[in-house]
Length: 174
Length: 314
Image 1 (cartoon, each protein chain N blue to C red):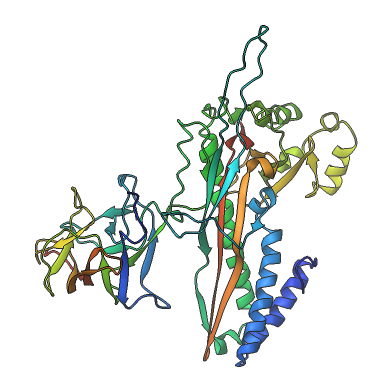
Image 2 (tube, rainbow over the protein chains, first blue to last red):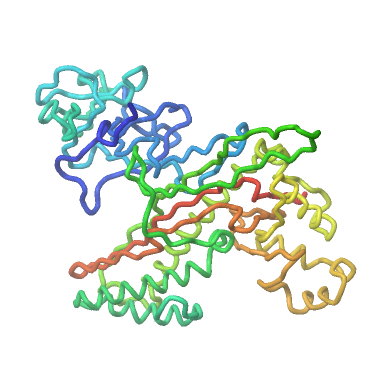
């Protein structure tokens, strides 16, 4: 079944949209080859490009608001170096909106590792592996902390499980 | 002022200043009226500047095609297919059968916007220079610069690196020609675009204001008439043509390098450039604070990579 618009989502239960939010618009690093769903955790690499998760590095967490293959982000017409009859988009330019973790909002994202998430559980996101970019329980002092559970696992309003949390920035001890 | 009236840049700036004065009003109706006027001035400005819009004219749209996987605005464009050749055959031979097919390509929309500018109106009043107009005009130029940059990035992607064959056409569409810019080398450059299977002649040639000075060096023999004298005395004008092509001259040397020319087929063969929100200024007056930014919602795709070419004159 094709992916539906309501299946991979992030919503701001509180605090967004607002007139002057702390958001960031960026492109994905070339090393990110798979489609990144909306609600994924990302950080900036040294080139200012999005990479998945936060891992154990002291980085600023962000949460993508749209998928990396959204039409306003990407229009794949083929590779002019190798393919015939390609088209080449002038717009879009690959930039996707992400909400920065220091912003004041309560978010709910479908991108989390299945498990138990009572309120106040600290959250991190793996930077590599099959769960890269997904929220999961983290340990203060070991993992870069990017959130704290608020309401727990809820319905994303479209029938899919989603994790409600407040973004938090807590660095790994030096 | 209605769409279609021609005004000069100076008239535009005077009217813009008059509109700006209304922005200082506490009357929200006057602020809205001023905003509407500023948007019209901005769109006149955008039509005059920027080279992308001169090469691929914009088409205003109000409706979109719908996608299943997204509610992002999009327009799907049909693309003319190639045709298998006719063949000579012997009597009683049945023709080969083909099921009719063609391609389509999508034009997806996204947004270009300027920074958000804010100022206390009391401080604005201390400026002799019309700071709001200067920043507003620069923001419009910045929108155009982003359009032009995106367009050339797409063109350079389509035609690949210098002297590399493009798979779609089977020929080189980004060529290096040695010997500088001469009558001979210019006409060699004009051969690049028609060499693709689409056989398109150049409708527009894009070059920067430094490169065109080499055209001014053409001698009487190269021009084949008194044009050399005219150019020596009066200089090149924006209406100068070469080889029947319209020259689009830009000052954006950072985008169009020296000794480089881009050749474009007619717009109907090149692609589509749609506009949903043309350049719009959002203005907010809240107490003593005036703030504004410009934005536009556009979508553009080069649908036929056979309609672009580039020559580097080494």
